[in-house]
Structures are given as structure tokens and as C-alpha cells.
View 1: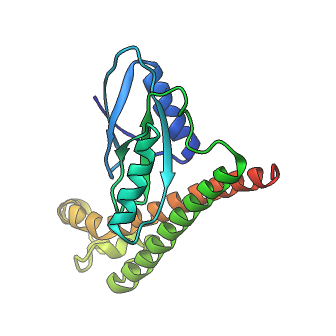
View 2: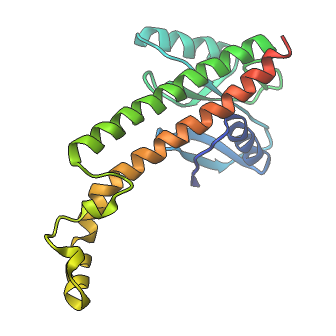
Length: 203
């Protein structure tokens, strides 16, 4: 079974994976497009955790994976350059990767850095695209290149409009998609910052 999900909260994503497992569905793989692969499992209970890391060298990533495997964790999602990693364990001793407020704080700081970086990156793309195509997300009519289209009426207007609509959507849709990713990553960053503030009060 495959499920595609996007989450606005890291903790809820982890909670969802654990709930799916409690219902008899084990997650065996998570790809970079947010598609989760599940299969029916036996009686054993699995635990899932998410981590964020940045590796400049592949050997450091391999050491990171080996370290967690030595403690009974299995990597089911993430690669050397992905930055986000999904871990699974069926041991009752390994229910959490981060067991104290200090390690949790480091975890959320890493997550915040990644989502903020993505938000800034997509924002740069947004303004570059906006400047190069002379199309604004707020001026969707500019995506239609047919001369005099908006002065046309009746069947002539609709035939020209419907003909160009798919092409206009591709031009304008790029702004929309990138804009959504900017908002998405900023929203998650805000949620993470709230969690960081809560943990700091415990230290």
C-alpha cells in the first residue's frame, strides 16, 4: 500500500507512522516525494523516528547509518544528500532517538535550519522567476500571451481563452507552486520554533 502525505508538524508525522504500525501497517520505505510504502506486518510493534542531518562527505553519512544500526535502528527513508531521515526499530529499548530535552533541542534546531534554508531558497527562485517571466502571481492575466484577448467577447474569446489556458497555467503555475513551497516551509519553521521555545523552558 502506498500513501502520499505532506505534514505541517514533524511530531504529527512521527505519530502518524506509529499509529499506522499499531493498526497493522509497517512502513518499509519513504521516498523523497513524500510517498510512504506500507505492508501488512506480524505481531511485532515498530517505532518510528525522524532525524535531520547534513553531511558534506558520504563517509560521514555511512558512519551515521552504521552508528544507528548498531543500536537496532533501520533506515527506511533518506539518502546521503536528502537531509531528512526516517528510522524504524522493533526493540522496546529503542522507542526514541532523543530521550532528553538537550538532544531534542539539537534535533529541532537542525530541523529548523533545514526548513528555513528551503524557504529562503524557494523564495529566491520565486523572485528570479517573477523577474524573468514578467508574470506576477497576483497578475494571472499576464500569463496569457494572445494579443487583445481581454477585449474579445463571445465565442471568439472562449475559443482563444480555452486554447491558451493550459499554456498560461504552466507559465503562471510555476509561481504558484514555488509560492506554496515558500509558505509551507516557513509555516513548518514557525511550528518548530514554538517547540524549541517550549524545550528551552525545561532546560
